[in-house]
Length: 205
Image (tube, rainbow, N blue to C red; front, side):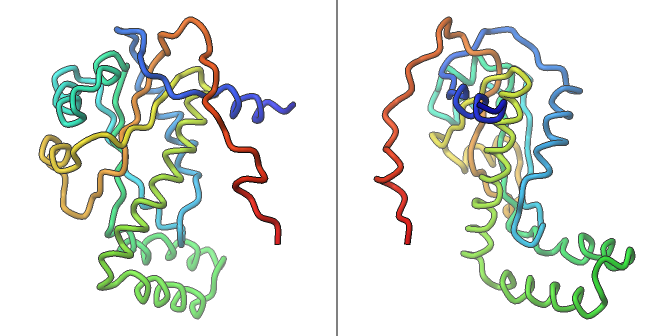
């Protein structure tokens, strides 16, 4: 079994953490430097993160998450955000490739036109893409965190408007999920919940 297979099988969502454990910012930055390599549509990199370790702000987020205790004990709570306006950065993202000669002027113009054609004026698509691509990044972050010895739990049980108000977020940033991170307080690895066999969720055509 490969190290990656073992990592995937050992990851669990932690429901309670060892209180008082601090994560060095340098270690978080290292994890995010790997998470930034996650795929995103048109390489627009829709994801933004807010890492909250300040106890006062954590409690505000906990209130927005209906008082869930795991936020209190976690070393940090990470707010995963999707940017509906990510497409506006396409010229900046692709200009470097054009300058390096990796893409032609024609390919550059076609790419920018395709991006604008997909996103401009389509709020539903902007929101869907913000959520979809931020979710890809978040899953990669959680696997990276596990590889570094940290436990996580993705959370969708929160009031997004309350989170936005607490953090003063701009309207184009969509709260996608929360991730609590720290050291799992469970002494033993919990049995994994039921997982469907492959033939129940995969069709080969």
